[in-house]
Amino acid sequence: MTWTIEALAVHFDKMVNLILARMQEMEAGWARATDLARENSRLERERASSQIDDRLAGMNEFRDAMKDQASRFVTRSELGLQLDALCDKIDRIEKRENVGEGKSQGMGAAWGYLITAVSAVTAILLVVHTLMN
Image (tube, helix red, strand yellow):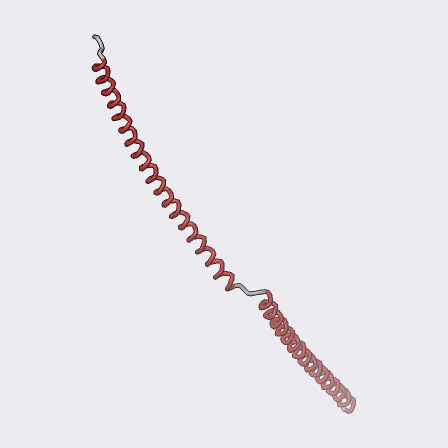
């Protein structure tokens, strides 16, 4: 087969056109791949953002629960006041008990002295009565 200039020109034109068509196909493929990569990236960002939002919402819910719990706790100053009031009540109750015990002990001792005195008088009267008879 012999090549003429016209045949070489036609052949080279065909080859260039084939190469250009292949390059256009490759460029279209790269464009599709780039578009898919961009779309996947966008979807991943949205998913990650959604996950972060969910996590932050959970953290906020936990933080609110902790604030609510902390608001129900008694402060040290309130507890100190309540403890002082309770100690005062205990002191007053102890004083009342001591006074009551003192009164009952005093009454018990008085009854004891009275019974002893009555017994002694009875014994003396019995001795006197026995001696007189």
